[in-house]
Amino acid sequence: MLTELKTITLLGAGGKMGMRISDNLQKSQYQVFYCETAPQGQQRVNDAGREVTDADTSIAISDVVILAVPDIILQKISSVIVPKMKPGAILLTLDPAASYANLIAQRADILYAVAHPCHPSVFLERYTKAEYDDAFGGVAAVQSIVAAFEQGTAEQRSALENIVRQMYAPVDDVHWITVKQLAYLEPTLVETVTCMVGTLMKEALDETVKSCGVPEAAAKAIMYGHIQIALAVAFRSTNPFSDACMIAIEYGKEKIIKPDWKTIFDEKELDLVLARMLKINAVRR
Image 1 (cartoon, rainbow, N blue to C red):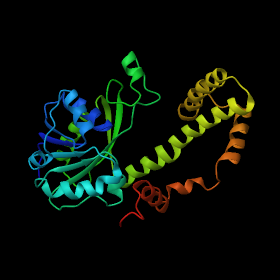
Image 2 (image 1 turned 120 degrees about the vertical axis):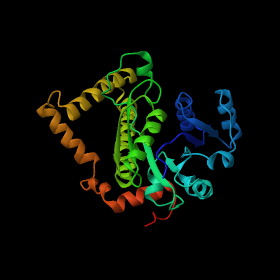
Image 3 (image 1 turned 90 degrees about the vertical axis):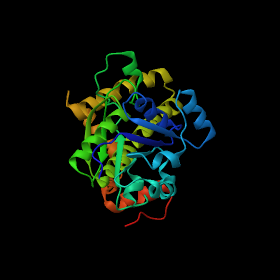
Image 4 (image 1 turned 180 degrees about the horizontal axis):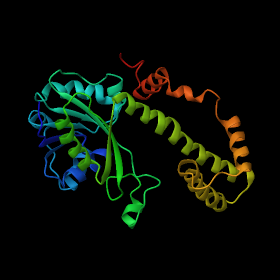
């Protein structure tokens, strides 16, 4: 199996994530082939000063093949791509859903990995305008990465980590976990819970303005400040919530959250949400 990784094929190079990754890989020492089938995506690749390569040509000679394509088409795409890869190469996907659901085409003589960006932390110390503007990561603000690589050697993982760090740069830490653990992080922790709460806060803001007659600017001012202080108190224990606030918090939990909400961390619930996201009847076992 390969321990030196020098050549990369990036499929979906003209998509949103593909362009972000391409911008960083272009600055690296790796030989990178940028593959894109959609005409608009091809134009974006060309406009960025990169050449679109025929995938059939590059896949066969690449040490790493990155699939920067939507999860719902990974089964179809991987069934075409995997047979063309050279022995010992690594297939790298960006989300855990399809891997956890066993939708990725398998070959005994290649390796599989997943690497997903954490995005810059809400607690990140930022010093420049570029860092403040980079909410997504991969441009100026430092972020961590969660990744899974359960088959290869330590040397292969180290070589792969160098690529992952370049893809999502600037990066501080790469946390190596299992595919299943990664699936519990996304979607369960960050989409089912965190993103849901974010949309709930926005709905609450809109309802305050609509139903209570509070000026929008005033509602935003108090909510934006309290988002920061709530996170600081809950996660950093900078100050305790007041007794009155704790009563309001418990009232909010009673009115908004189901008592059995933690069942979302059951494996069967993880399977259900991933099947729904992938638009399949059930994950494969």
